[in-house]
Length: 198
Image 1: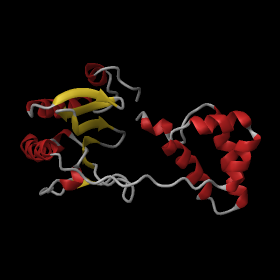
Image 2: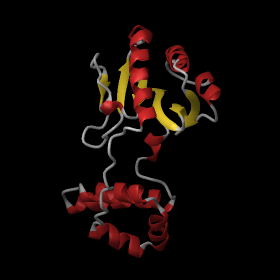
Image 3: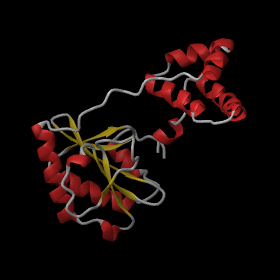
Image 4: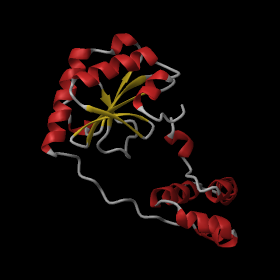
């Protein structure tokens, strides 16, 4: 899905789940949260603090609570989309309009808003250290354009590339991965950029 320029653009051009996303929007606006676009999708905030976002994907649509790990989750609807990687955010995935339960959503929102107002949040951990594989370091030293572009990437994007190469067990696999990512690095993009725009 393309990135929306504003909230109305997002809802007007949602290719999937348009009616369901609009119903969720109404529930979120009823809570008194401010609505804006962040990362190409609607984000609902209070006092500048991210509380909840919404989005639609191929097999589901739903909400994500930025501090969802702290919610009591009495209905057991929240899931960690990236177990082992995501500490605070939790998703509430829905598969049909029948899964939209405004009274329950309102209770979750009330608790999430209360947490946001109190300033309570999951503690941030130090970012993972970059472990540069020697094979990638050699390729970047040889390919000056890729080397300069790599240095200009954010630390997170640098780690994504390094981890991608480090995760390969065999030398041949590492070489194939490096050959595949060098054009992406030269272009100034991240390994997972195509998923960031979903």
